Length: 268
Image (tube, rainbow, N blue to C red; front, side, top):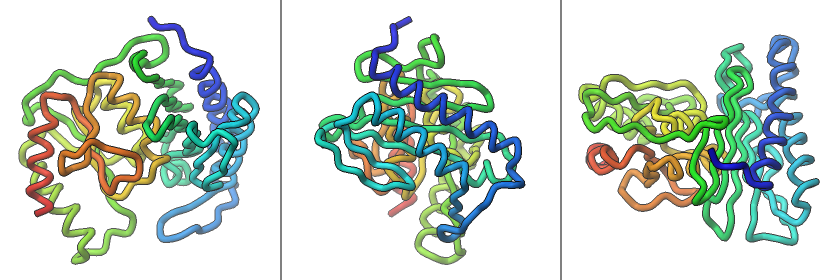
């Protein structure tokens, strides 16, 4: 077991404190005040409260670092080479419907690259963390991506775009990807939290995950987890994934090339 660095300890403290607040609000989810941000995209008091907690704890420990947050946007610090990337409640729609599958996700981008990540699932009390060249962990246990190499034995996760209107380019793209994989796999899951999907790839629970149109805060921590667990994270076209890319594919090394080929051909 690797000892957690001071950096990871800072991130864990923030994620766990925010997660405890989410649990309290989840217990009274029907009483939350909810405002509509956009199509099928909601923000709750719990979401903004969690973000404030993360911001306070991280800024207190590293006051010069910059921030990129789902609700608060970009906040420039004196140190712009280190950027906290925070999703205070990944799985907001699940949360608001009383579904116990959501997480706090905190990533650190250093010199433009994902460097460290913490994903905390407060309901299951599962803490995933990783730091470059240190490895990926679930609690104190080292985790690795799955070793399965047959698609017929593989379980993948994905995300369905919000309000997917039939006949649009977005729907055609997603349905083409889905159809190209469904008959080849043991199954496909859509649980509504990209951060946890990536953490599960890192832990070997899924063989892979793909999605289109995600934001940096959805994946910043998970990218580090998968790579440090021995997996690959690319764009669907095979290019190495960088934060802000239009799509993402994460899997073990044995399946990455095959999945890249199938999904790329589905897009063509």
